[in-house]
Length: 238
Ligand code: 1GP
Image (cartoon, rainbow, N blue to C red; front, side, top):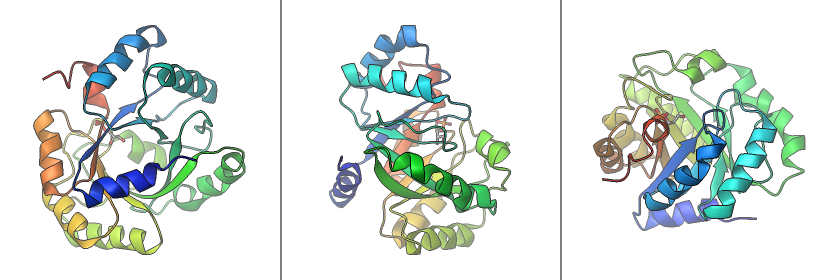
């Protein structure tokens, strides 16, 4: 069993900021994988997250095995549903979409995932997943059929994050959604991170290095970059 969560807590206690590159197995071209991995190895990434909306398990296994041959970063599953579990990864964000009121994404998928997870050695990291309104309908909103939280209602975002913490989640993930037009408001990141003890992850719509810094300065402990790196593997070269 890995110690990925312990390492995230340690980084937080030392104020070391973390960065995850999110790979969608459906969009990774296996023939280009060696270039992709070399770019990841040159980047400041501390973690690789793997997930997507329509991922088949056999692609997942193959992709993870190939990444692990040439990259030592911890690989964390970021699944959209219980079919996206691979015991080749190191850990899984065991997500509950606590901004929504769709019981499938609050508990049903999690119940279905347990028999599969029990067959693996994956480190399970329970995560309160909070979708924030971002100016466009994102895949999370469409697939989960839930409404994101009003981006101007900071009190509700905070209470949701605090409820997630009180329920025993180990992380809070503030998500604008992949390809979001607007990122999670910095005041929201600040308010949440100052009022909960557990680490705060922030992602969705960040397209510039400055956006990563802004999220860190606001209080994010780990930032997730998906689309920007997917579109341009040289994103971190600067
Ligand atoms: C999506 O937060 C992640 O779940 C990353 O979003 O693809 O917009 O970087 P982007």
